[in-house]
Image 1 (cartoon, rainbow, N blue to C red):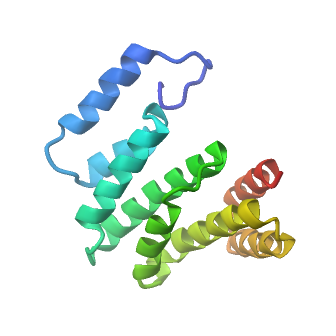
Image 2: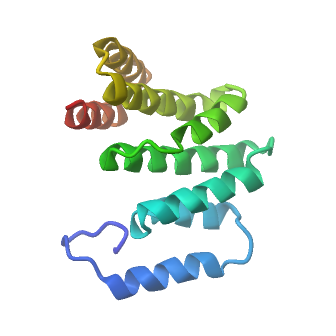
Length: 163
């Protein structure tokens, strides 16, 4: 329930306990990746940057598609936070990692979302409207692929942060 924050009131004690529980799990595994990814909003932006960088350095060379998807999900969250905070320091580190992963059907969705976020960040830095047009192409592609709800969320996000 705290992850959903249904009533809009944060339970800081519960959040602290959840954060501690996540890192009590000795090794990052599927469960820990998922828990961290879903609770990243409980951590400060700076803590998320540190944790994500460490995860990429430790697991970034894996060929395991599941771990690659988990890392990409975490990076997507961090890039969203970067846009929300208008703080793009260190984002190239994450883009380099994403570029190092081969694009396969299993990874295509994640890489498309990262590309969308990269274009939105570049737009915010340069003001070039053509970057937003390419964002719209990615949104349309996701919609055509049957991911209408996700494409709608990306469209709303773009509209909110395109200034």
